[in-house]
Length: 105
Image (cartoon, rainbow, N blue to C red; front, side, top):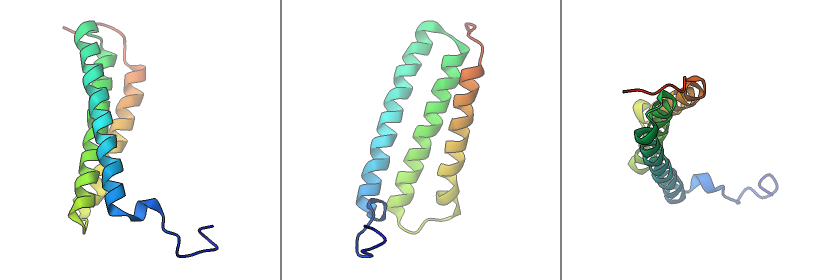
């Protein structure tokens, strides 16, 4: 349909919808971060701490992406900061899977 009718808009071209999606992704990642933080405070495991850091990085990436969408004309920082934070969050997710299950003080 998109190829046949060029007037059909994609959802990602609508800035208000993009901001709403990024904001909801930020809030969901932040909620998950707080839930895993509570789990870390109960268990004290290193893998939970790394998982909290991964969710915080992904939540921050969504916050920066939302701010970049609201700002209008993105600069280099606003373009590459969400990408870098998402790569960092993904690397931390992989590290959380490989982290030892030992307790921290």
